[in-house]
Length: 227
Image 1 (cartoon, rainbow, N blue to C red):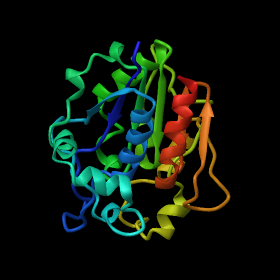
Image 2 (image 1 turned 90 degrees about the vertical axis):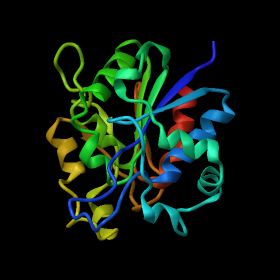
Image 3 (image 1 turned 180 degrees about the vertical axis):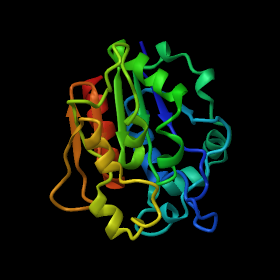
């Protein structure tokens, strides 16, 4: 049977400062989407509220704006997928083999406390599926609880955008919290690569996480290998 992936994207368009735009980091979606497409998987997109997922302006500039991101933006049908994302209530988790949380700083606001996304992730994981994220997408895993009340990330190895990378990107003063520290606070065994902004992926059983935008392709490939 054809495998099916559920991508998670943000609905948030700016930092706490309304003059500082943010949104989906496009290549984190397109790199993974391309890998899953080549594997022959079916793919859907969900967001915490449903509807429009805005794009992070910095992801549309060199060197982040690459071939797959440009092709997506030039494709009206693909852009329509981001204009009309499903809401968690619309999603039957039993149809999916894996969930993949994309990033962009925006997700720090709307991913962690989405009970709908937590439900979907828990159900997929407990049914033997894969829960995955890249970059800030791991903020969506912070509060996912399993049926026994334990946190999904407690005692498991994870990676995601490092605090050092926030500082180097000069957004450490804009973000609402230190995601790396929040992961550690929840008992996660946080890891990161030696060199910031280079690909780094961690797989702990059926939990697969990538550190930064350059890790999206490798994260998706790891998910494919596990499936």
